[in-house]
Image (tube, rainbow, N blue to C red; front, top):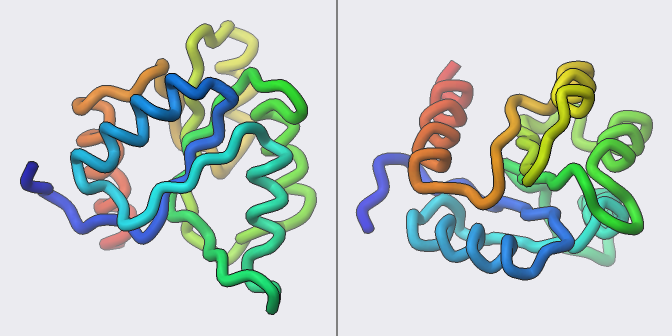
Length: 144
């Protein structure tokens, strides 16, 4: 499939559901969205990964884009966002966080508005139309 955008270096999927991760990773790979797609099963794993970026023992890098599930065991999306913000991780990075959810309540959607890094929310699983919209917005932001 021919892409209409420059592929990102890395996208991170943070979701406890294996099927959702499989479907989303397959779609993102098929569309050529990123050179690398990393999957983490909960917010704690994602936070641990981000904290390792830049440390001498790891050659990890910040993802350009994170798709973050709201409801997960161990550490949910909101707790991840609180911890991420409190630790000033990647403040200088241009990383974008998008929330994925299968059932966002009004309360959850209102709460998401309080997080500056969260640009939008999408229903699971991602569609080709979602991805095209996301990439168009990402490329616009990058060109500014």
